[in-house]
Length: 336
Ligand code: UDP
Ligand code: MG
Image (cartoon, rainbow, N blue to C red):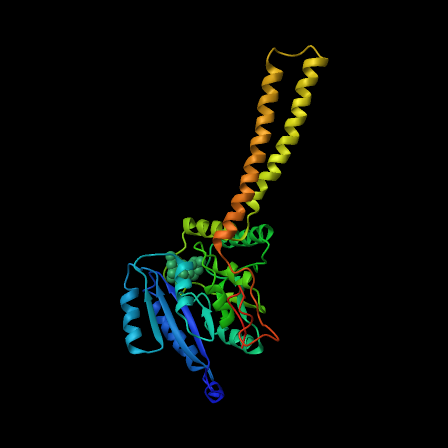
């Protein structure tokens, strides 16, 4: 147990910035310069810069090592191979020890200056301040259009409200970070997970710049994978849709069966064996789809179980012993 005096000692709060990098040798020097300049403008806040090198094949790792040796605020996590942006961000979050954690891309598309506004929001009492893109420069019409469509589709399918046109550029308070760390799912769609967590969140509109140098590390293939992860991690609607489809087909099959029976018994335009065949095909088709749908419902539940997310997230307890009741299934207890 700490004595009251020890807990009273005032520590400068720490801000952890997590910067995933994959083949960013052309931008990394400039990024470090901008981030260092950003750090000098902060009052009453220490900073650690956690660079996660996601298995770059160029000189990114070597450069980062050099910077880390020169400046104790710079830390490096080097992956053994490319694991993908979302995993890199996760590793950074896991390693961060700050009172707040900022996720920011290495390519300066997200201006570090906006982080000042995020910090202001955090000091006002918000737990998440996420950047919403009002304008996007230097990105193809195709990318912007597909991204717009994707976020709208995702929100239509998901029960969690995931803000539109929002990337991973955001600040998160320690309780949010601790909750994220208690979510062990393997296919990680970080921006959705942060929405799922809850707490007090706010949007900060900003202009997304062009990449400082180099090319996007998200080719179409990775983008599709990412979009699929987003939808499948936050919605079991595609699975449930087969029940609806099965019901619809069964209803149509019933009409088809009635029609076949009608032709057989009330008209003379029928071919021998056709009625029985039609009934068998239509009946089985309907039954099969409904069964697939039922399986889907179970698979959806198994999927929810294996994601092993906390059942609920508690922001605060009142009237319990310090730290909350012992039986809690929630990773987070007292906020402050
Ligand atoms: N990135 C990563 N691993 C990957 C792909 C990208 O760590 O496999 C990093 C990349 O270095 C950048 C950030 O994730 O800092 C966003 O990537 P990028 O700028 O290429 O994506 P875009 O902005 O074009 O969507
Ligand atoms: Mg980028």
